[in-house]
Length: 114
Length: 116
Image 1 (cartoon, rainbow over the protein chains, first blue to last red):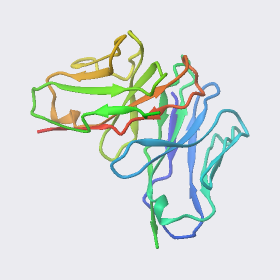
Image 2: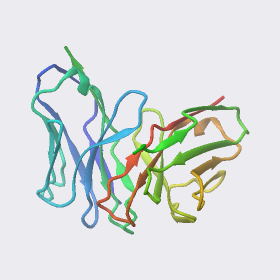
Image 3: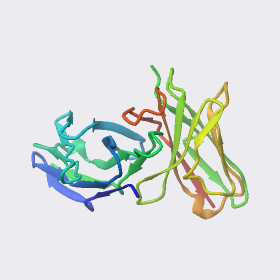
Image 4: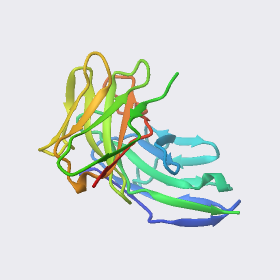
């Protein structure tokens, strides 16, 4: 079935370090891919998305490229800030049935220290 | 434009009671999704509704759980005879278009249910 796998956390970085959070997926068909961010005690906010192979989503300095050949959608940021500390979720839209329901990875906690 | 609204934000119930969770989608959105987040886990899809219709309930437990999205008013997720395992954060999301796999879903702040 369709699934998403993220690297386990927590990921702890110093401010201004480079960030990579790995995400790989398994899907039949051609899903759209998303990264959502969840700050403590809050709901999920869309960070970026990509709808087809080789698309690059970007927002607030974060980037991810839809790689069909490696079934990956790794999240990157060149210089993290303390305010980026949150839980990051990779997700795909289930391509079967075309309902748009999302399948999430387990989440990766990012802690950025000053 | 107000975002997705959920209430209550926190709900405490004793085993055997009923829990009702409400979700008001963003203005102009007619598609609602419910997800459940168990502690230390990702979100799991429960149900997808359009106005007055349940489109996909493949993620709903077979018993005690039900959902509706009436013509007027918010979407309701109802859990009867709650058990401790129902303790979780329940998130609602809405989207504007019909069954589009590329559509962005906008999430509410969630309802955190605690069953004593």
